[in-house]
Amino acid sequence: MSSIPHRVLILGGTSEARALAAALVADGVPVTSSLAGRVARPRMPEGEVRVGGFGGPDGLATWLTDHDVAAVVDATHPFAERISTSAATGCATAGVPLLRLERPGWRPGPGDDWRWVDSLDDAAALVPALGSRVFLTSGRQGLSAFAGIDDVFFLARCVDPPEPPLPPRIEVLLSRGPYRAEDEAALLREHRIDVLVTKDSGGTLTEGKLTAARELGIPVVMVRRPAHPDVAVVTDVNGARVWVAECLRIRDHAAGA
Image 1 (tube, rainbow, N blue to C red):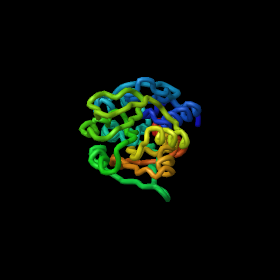
Image 2: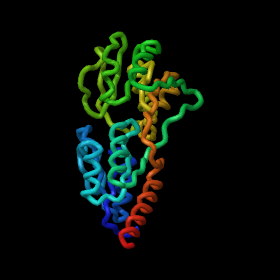
Image 3: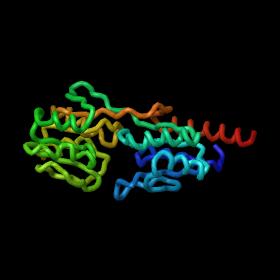
């Protein structure tokens, strides 16, 4: 791929977003990665980086036009509903092609005891019937769903400190993956965990907890992914790279016509 002046916007601070940014920069493509700014010390991708929102779909559409963006890749977290919806609307308004880069979700295997729910509120309603010591790995912004449960101990792992309301019996671990299955098993044993609550984030960086839960016979409450806008989807970085190359080829052809 030759150097092309048209810019590509990547939404998200996921590992896939960083890998795609690195690949496109290596291809000579001008890239801007947009981070939400919710993590205090994010891992920075290669290329240009902007932090913060666009001001809704209309603000995004204006930004895309003003910066001559040829393509947008939504590589946000599978549970980042708002930005995905905003991206679909903003790209449609600006007439810019949009791709969703989303890692495959997790699937239970032999020996797993998973209980699927649609939301963290549903998870909170189910937890007291399953155990009394819960490992929460659903992110700091969802801990309020469990704030009203006072007869369960929660071990919550987050990248940054959570804000109230929080469950009355809670211990917070500030940590960032990846995590090895053997270390996760040791953590579960140390804290006598008997229930794991997580979201179907997918990927390998945090999958170790699921292996540990299987080995220890611990039930898993798994929150399903939300629905995303109906846009083109790929599940790996190379697929996104190929899609970007085709978008830029079409844009170049149209410009030279």
